[in-house]
Image (cartoon, rainbow, N blue to C red; front, side, top):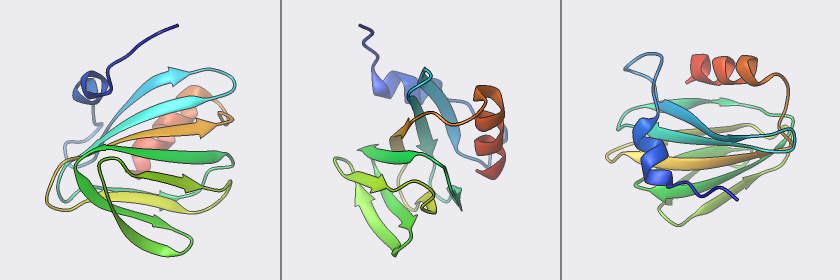
Length: 121
């Protein structure tokens, strides 16, 4: 068993560019990946698809998520689920938005996936 504090992981997340959301891989195995996003006001993760199921747990803050049915407001405590290959994106408006994303099964090459996700943010 491994216990991690999501706020600590989010605080340690880094961005490839200061204008992009910070990300941190909190867990990565053959069957699942957990990615933490720290999205500052005005930042967004561009709409993209994933071959896996994606679950977004809104840890703190508020913002918007995009899916096949459009855009919806979310806030701390919400759980958002996406079917495999469903387009999805996230954005913060006036407050920092912290999201824990569970991706299962973990797709593709670890380094390539993180680099692609960071580049799209």
